[in-house]
Every structure is written in C-alpha cells, then in structure tokens.
Amino acid sequence: MSRRSVKGVAVLGALAAGAVALAPAAAAEETWTMPNLIGTDLQGAQDAIQSLTDGAVWFSSSTDLTGQGRLQIIDRNWTVCSSTPPPGATFTTSTRIDFGVVRDTEECP
View (cartoon, helix red, strand yellow):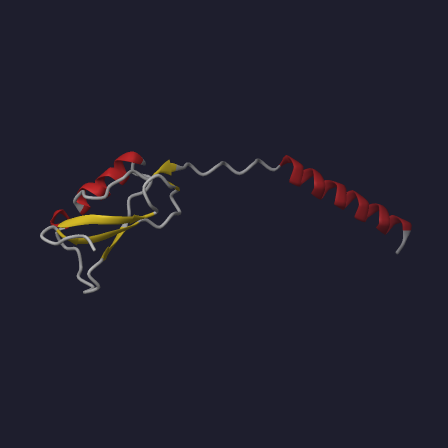
C-alpha cells in the first residue's frame, strides 16, 4: 500500500468516526404503566389504553379465555379477565397488548 493510500484511509477513518460521534442520539421511546383493567368491559379497557397514551397506542387484541375461539364483536359484552402486559408493567407503542376476556355472563377462569 502506498503512503498516499495509507493517508487516505486514515482520513476516511477519522471522518467516519466524526460522523458517528455527531449523529443525534435516538429519542427514548415513551413508556406508560399498564393500568389494572381486570373486571372492566373490553370496550372500556380499549378506551382506557387509548386515553392513557393520547392515541399513540390505538390497537389492542383480545382472546376468548374459554378456548372456544369466539370473536369479540360487541366489545361491551365481554369482561376483561387478564391483560398482557400485566397491570403495573410498562409498555411502549411497540408492545403487543392483549386482553383475555369472557362473555359478560361468564366467570373468569
């Protein structure tokens, strides 16, 4: 390698290191604490998450805890028995939120 090539590599290395040092720090992702929504109706639980996060988290899923695989069509007719993440845990916009539910006429398992 010629002396000129070595200097060029050294200059490029210094420029790359400077670019990395000057890159802006990634913004910290906002976090929230999962409220205890056990016992509320599914629609109320979904509304609570959207309100808590000012709409930043607008989707949550729900699972029929009886194992029957029923779809939750009218959310107010379903009672929240569990949540993932659990109450008190922190979550972000990238956290998958799922409510375990049963019909409002059924007992939580």
